[in-house]
Image (cartoon, rainbow, N blue to C red; front, side):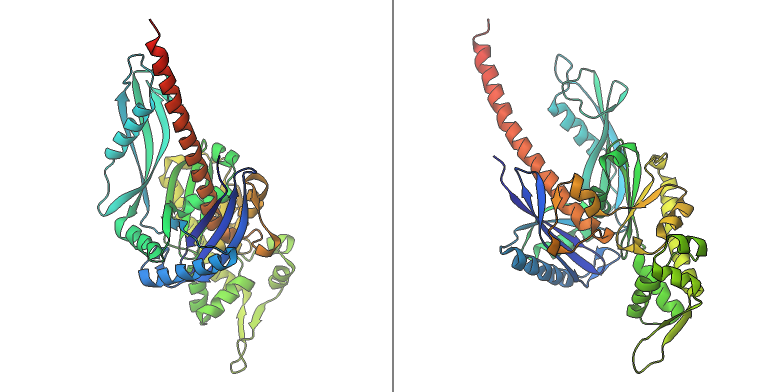
Length: 434
């Protein structure tokens, strides 16, 4: 009988490490949030670990606070990997049915997937992180998900292969292992975020997730329920902050505050006044913004038009890169479910309307808890205070994927025992068959 298990996701970002521990209830099929911790981290640049020791210290800090809250030691974690070094490729191979009755077995399936993986030309200094089967083709018949026990002569596998830079993979692995915790699985960041915010219907129809983080923007495209493309762009919301700091000649911390409090993607007065908050309506009507910095210095005064132009320029560049990425892959058209934006960078006011204009597709914000609570069976206590924050998509997705994988292992182990018993019975019966 399956047991209740504790699952911990560790999302290592450019400036924050987020840790989430949940209890997976086997009887009710729910996840109960036990603890959440978010702490600043040094040693990560554009999603990539560059200082193992610094990141390891940050992980120890997060884990110790999680352990204090749940009252027990955390033995294993699910971890993300991020950065523009991540690339995806495609491969395929074909095998002949091995059985005399021409029905494909699990051995045939495993063999054709293995051969497809081996046939892939691995880029220099890269290694394979994951292999995802897109579809099987039997004698020219496409779109087959489960070919086992189907009849045919030739079985072909179409696979998507996720590759990462070997050195960066080793660094993130070392950083976690040095924190005295085991790694259950390492998951691509935009795939983790997609698990938390995309519905099965969206994945089936065709959807693109855009995960705008601090130092990177992840893209994952789903069609017919499966991942068909993924990439990571080396630009994120921190670049907006840098532009504000340079444009207004202020410290980076002040620029971040300005972005959070007054940032807006476009100064379209009509849209701001109709759809914006009371603060943004006031911003649209006013001419200047005044910020008190300190007692020793004069107030900072700047025009709202200047701030909007700075932000609009960088956001336009980011969406331009996304548009270019979509045009490069044949899987981006059509996308009936449009674009789902998530990540901390999508908190900018007016970003949905701006994205619709730039990408010319339906756009909405993906919030993990709004989607997950009713449909994914997540129980969130009032004290957690996570709300519906899109910046938590990654860490929420890690624990959801962790739950999925552990359920699959349980089913596989139970199925394995049952298969063995049935095989024994068949052998015994065959002894009495003339």
